View 1 (cartoon, helix red, strand yellow):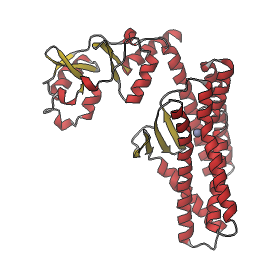
View 2 (cartoon, rainbow, N blue to C red):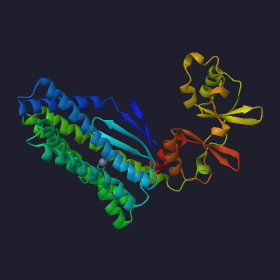
View 3 (cartoon, rainbow, N blue to C red):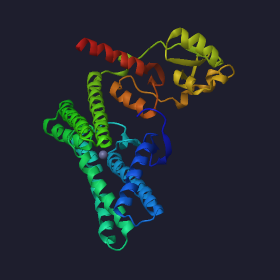
View 4 (cartoon, rainbow, N blue to C red):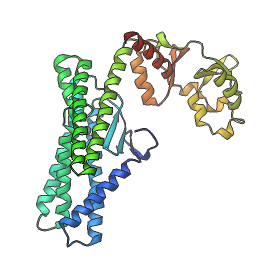
Length: 372
Ligand SMILES: [Zn+2]
């Protein structure tokens, strides 16, 4: 899910956004709904089944957001910040900033989504029952939304990682065994079995003539497979970095650059020549701030000749830092949260060095080569 997102806004610290791929699935669902309504209710006017189709489709995605909000609300109540909720081609995803620290927390966060979907299903089921026979339009809308939300809850309860059911399974095994990595391994294996089953079912459905549905099921399987692999790799990553402290891997000799240097000179004489990622901006002997590739990239190219590094640097006061005994895994989470690639290591106001993603990945690579 890389690439640009359309930002809708920020509520309670959560950024709501839409991935462009979402428009594909929104269009497909709206089209399939209008076709379904026009077949089921041939006496409706064209305008009616189109507007009901679009409205139903929008309400479906509102239900998906509510499902993600339920996960987020429980996470926040347990002290785990939520960065964003994104709608994309396969539904919604809440970017929760870190893993739950306890099995019971993970269980509650994971179960909240399907529970919300069941409640939403009951709500629309109620609308369906109450309006059936009186308001056909409302009944049609209620029926479909009741069914789809129940389906959404059931689909998410499939016990394979990364689905909610996989997280629930992991939290149970984790709680019983006390072994987080082992529990993740089991949940990912089940997740892969589920994913391969989807791919096989997709191929069978496609070969039996329902090409589009088969393709879609296979596509979901492929997505699940990738996600299951990725989430397992993340756990392995955390495990191999566990226990390493910031001062064991920081770069101690960050090059210094005078504050009056233009960005163009900085790029040519420092960035390219040293191959480093982070630089200290100095006023003679006094540290003013730091500048990294990140800040350079944010500066428009045609201004590189006029702008000085002190204008684009992160000033000392705004600098987010970590202490030398901070755990690398925590620092990675911190960099994710702050959206930065470098973080200074500071002790009692003194800058000791810098830790960057590059160094962490480097170390990880070495460790994996040794253990392979
Ligand atoms: Zn969910």
